[in-house]
Amino acid sequence: MTEQSPSPERRPGPADPRPGSRLVDLVQVMDTLRVMCPWDARQTHASLTPHLLEETYEAVDALTAGDQAAVREELGDVLLQVVFHARVAQERTDGTGYTIDDVADGIISKLTRRHPHVFGDVSVSGPDEVKQNWDDIKAAERAAAGNGEPVSALDGVPMNQPALSLAAELLRRAGRAGAPAELASAGQDGVSDLGEQLLALVEQAQADGLDPELELRAAARAYAERVRDWEAGT
Image 1 (tube, helix red, strand yellow):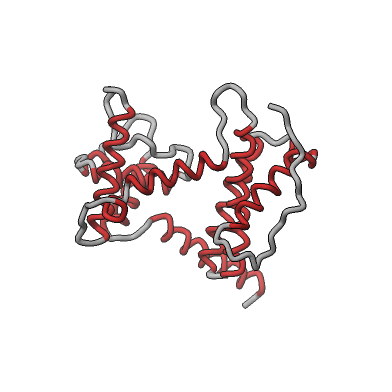
Image 2 (cartoon, rainbow, N blue to C red):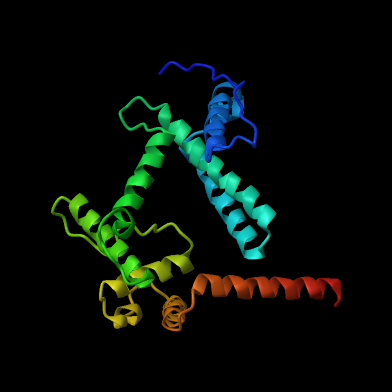
């Protein structure tokens, strides 16, 4: 692919009335950086991965703190990672490349398919039925993509996420699929008693209608405040 230097002159101001116009400008800025900045030019999906995780966690911190100015800034940092990865992918010439428009088209298509009560003629009684329809449509899509291979309710769960949220998601998925509850406490070689107890606590939290990740985060933040008070002698 022959790279052409983007033209950075066209930068509509924030007063531009078109919704999303600054997103177009962000893509243009990213194009310019990819061509003209030595650091940006050498980045790969692998080198950017830690930044995607870091920026996501920082956005969660801002949301938890309720700092709306920080939320706005951190969402911008997350958005940059999406645009950056798409820009890197755009350069591939092996048939696996895609553009930011392809990324947007994919999520538009998914949202349209999974909201037939909005974009089709399906009627729903409320948010619970919306969620059930989403899960049913998603399961049908996985089955269709499986080409006849067995489909698991756990397919698509990101196994590299933090262990607490991973356990919670696995239990949620298995529960929706009708897996017997005793599977969570069946035990397995190589798993410590502590690991089994932690999994049982996650299961109990869900039974109580609590998100174990959020509950542990709240407890950890409270502990951090106590440690700071102790350090300050208060």
